[in-house]
Image (tube, rainbow, N blue to C red; front, side, top):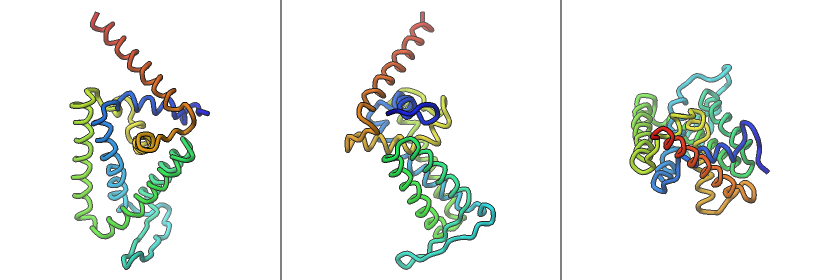
Amino acid sequence: MGKIGLFDLEKHFAFYGAYHRNPVNIVIHMLFVWPIFFTALLILYFTPSLFNLPRLEFSLIGSNIILVFNLGFLLTVIYSLFYVCFDVKAGSLAALLCLFCWVTSSFVANWLGFHLAWKVVLVTQLLCWTGQFIGHGVFEKRAPALLDNLVQAFLMAPFFVLLEALQTFFGYEPYPGFHEIVQAKIEAEINERQEKKQKLIS
């Protein structure tokens, strides 16, 4: 059964789907959205610990990993909780991916050091954002969702590309009939947009 309000997955996923219908644009987002999240955590590794919380250091396969409970950790927690609230199964998988990104980015950041990490982050962010704008401009032929909904673009996008992948490759649905309902809402949104364009032209 669908949720309402902030965690209305049908509404949010329909909004996302209306901006991502072209197969090439969908693939571009599947490839580029999570690296944006990962590199955001990578640069946030260098922010100070929250409330002077102690660092956690341990060895893994001969390498030291230092985890800092800072803004990167806070971002990971916020994203993870949001995703689990949207859908327990897919959200839990997304939360695990968020945690994996946090741990891995901490290792990479500690290994690279700030002087090199910020350059890697800058190049990756520019590449990924450029790829997505190309996906929208060339293939989707519609402005990206961030121009209409910043929260959608930055908070929900990683979960939605994962949900899109689970649907495409495994036929996953949060509950029976979910994708049929979402598709109907997408069509309604597109028809409404086209009607508005026709009125403006006439």
